[in-house]
Length: 147
Image 1 (cartoon, one colour):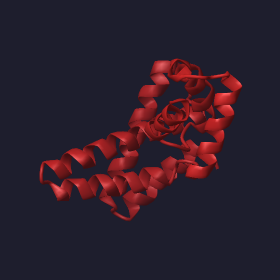
Image 2: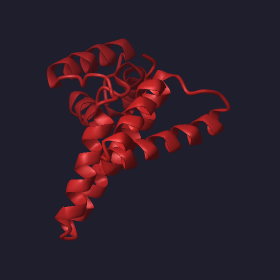
Image 3: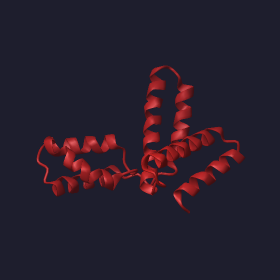
Image 4: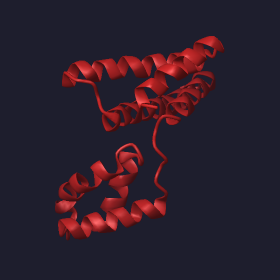
């Protein structure tokens, strides 16, 4: 089943089951997908949808951190529940070992020798790991490899 159809079906199920957290998260996801669609003036493909989901998950992680600092564990747990709902639609995440292997390959492919070459490495690496690894983690691994 196509990813967009899976998301819409999950929304219908969440509404039927009266699962407010899933309903809210999936409605927000579909809205973000429509915004992306207007931005690129066509239906987003699966990779672009994964990027939208990844950005929503990242926003939720940031919110959880802020809510915890602000003493609002109730809101933090709601955001964490939404993260779990959204992650069901992302591809399997890469393990640290797989990610390190990809970093080594990208560094050698780019012929990178120092931190100045980090942009070239990231340009090669990010399309390969899109939706399967957090950009911050990839950045840290590349930075430590080139340092």
